[in-house]
Image: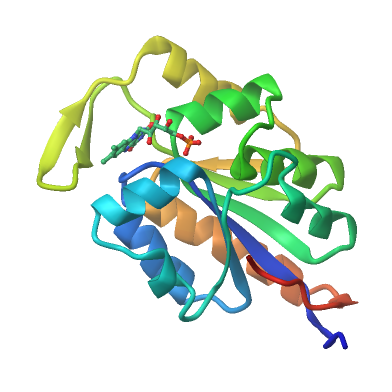
Length: 194
Ligand SMILES: Cc1cc2nc3c(=O)[nH]c(=O)nc-3n(C[C@H](O)[C@H](O)[C@H](O)COP(=O)(O)O)c2cc1C
């Protein structure tokens, strides 16, 4: 039996430690969030002291276990109003820009574009020199021109907002939620998480 509910927010987690804890805290402030993990995200979450099982307390969690990215079928049936990818690795951003969909997160990003669901991407690589948190300490990294170019190119995608800071991510989410509040919401069936 299916239970009617509101459309949900699809949140892609990639294998990045960049403001990972803060992104998880932000997601906890929102309602109706489903997490979609890459394989690297699962490993990196663990390295930063988070458990996938822990995420299941409060969220539906889809893991990257199928070649076809089976959960993306939910996008065809209007289950999601928005995709957030936060934090987004340089790998995932480069693939999104190139139109490659070979992970669960690159697939939800691509499918969102194809069914005209807006996306918000919190890119890790935004400046030639940055501070980021490794599992043990803060470190300096130097994103390459190819990484910065991919972030810049993603900004030109239709219906994609690329944000570079946590404050910008919060603002973009707030703005999207306000847009949705002004729209009547669709009623859809409940998806099964893996
Ligand atoms: C502890 C740890 C932290 C990482 N943080 C980042 C990061 O902040 N940004 C990034 O681009 N890659 C980071 N990586 C590397 C990615 O996990 C790696 O490129 C992976 O292949 C990305 O796969 P995905 O984009 O499918 O999640 C990190 C790796 C480890 C082990």
